Image 1 (tube, one colour):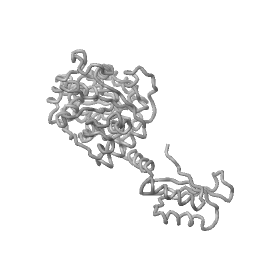
Image 2 (cartoon, helix red, strand yellow):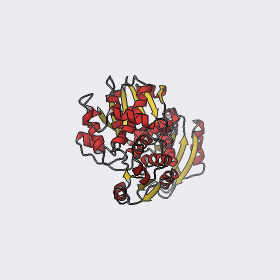
Image 3 (cartoon, helix red, strand yellow):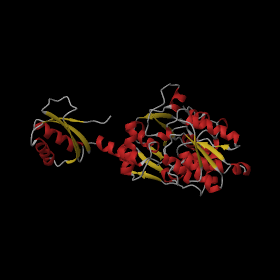
Image 4 (tube, helix red, strand yellow):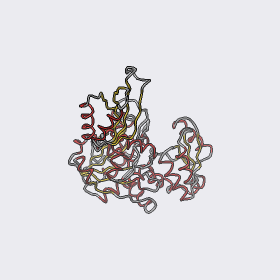
Length: 414
């Protein structure tokens, strides 16, 4: 991790001047997204929180910046032949969109199991999509093969100095709009965004703390920098930063310039996505909510600081978003499933429903179970899905049920 607040730029692959040049190059072609103070998030975390809304880019992610900066530096011959990349996410869409806008042919190789919606979104921006391999690694290898066979220019999603410089323009804008920021919390996948932002932060005349965030399931950069060997894998909500192997160039920058890397669990990521929708009225994908997740998980670390977080993307499947929101309601006590033991006799359901009515709790769904249960033959299990105002309201319902001698258990989320 960083030991010198301002190491010599010549030893690193990207300089502050590179980022400034990238900003001039892409100016007017990407959205200068707002950086806004969030009073509610500040009150919630004890820090003074500013949010950079990169989910407001045309393709809903910051990846456009690096992709465009790279495309604009290609010579005419390379532009005419076209570019190629391996990606099933935001890099694909950013490259496709700006390639189409500039008249540069774009080919994207995606794994065969890529969701159809991602294929269609990328094709809608004018790219040619090739489905190859069962994994990203297989798609990547095939893209590198086509690069040679078709004499195309490969555009790496993060391990390229032009990409890093483009992503660094996020920090330039944040610090121009909120010069008092003393902390930046940045999601890390391959490391392109944090490398660019750290380059900008370290070039300032004052000290700015730079903290990276990774999902607990994919601690790849954390492992690389700290020398640990935690496993990378699993279904994370933050799929945009689910990278098993960080970049070589980006690792150099992170090791030299970044102060710390923290890991956040899935529950914190879900909570952050839900809070951003409820409080900021904005949609964030799991990776886009990682900065807020870290702020929530490590409140004491950031208390009293002036913190900038980046919603780096807002591309999340609507069904997944609905699931996250419902799970958050369940964890907050506003949505609950109760398992109640009843005797199988007339009026039993009515008596239970009477208590729900008395406590003004809305019943959403009922399910009886007489057969697949370990209760006696004359007993039954009743699952009640219900809606309450908050955890205290739910607790009052449970107390009322138990006061009437019902055996009741709350079905908890994992």
